[in-house]
Amino acid sequence: MSKEKYLEAVGRRKTAIARVRITPATKVAITANGKEFEVYFPTQELRRTILSVFNDVPEKFHVSAKLIGGGIAGQAVALRHGIARALLEYDINLRGKLKVKGFLKRDPRAKERRKFGLKKARKAPKWSKR
Image (cartoon, rainbow, N blue to C red; front, side, top):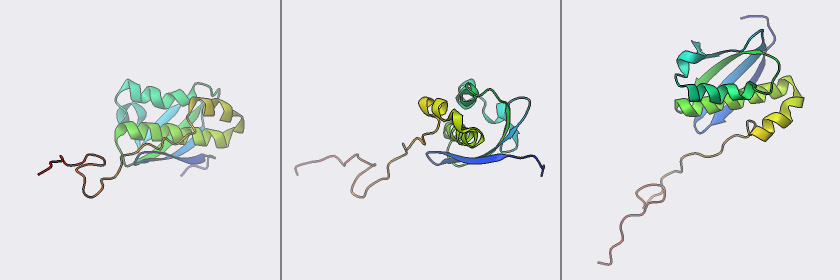
C-alpha cells in the first residue's frame, strides 16, 4: 500500500455501493474494481455521468473505487456520488457548485417491495363480481 494521503467516501444509488478513494495526481485517472475506467464502463454516457463531477474542479485526482451491488448504471451514479463526497472532504468551498448540480444528494428512488395479496408492488388481481 502506498504512503500517499487519500480521502475516502461512500456513494450509493439503489442497491449499488461505491467505496471511493481519491488521491491528488497530475491527471484524472479512474480505476473501478481494479479495472480501467473505459473497460468497466463501456458506454460514453456512463463515462460522461462520472466525469461530470470534475467539470468545476481545477485540481486533478486519481480515483480508486470498489463497486458492489446494483447494475452498471446504478454503480456509475454511486461512483459519482462517492467522488463528490470525497471532493467535499478535500475542499469545502466546492460544496456550492456540487450541491447545485445535485451530486451530493443520494437519489432515494428504489424498487418498491411487493405486498401480500397483490401481484406486484401496486398491481391488484383482476376484480370480478362473481
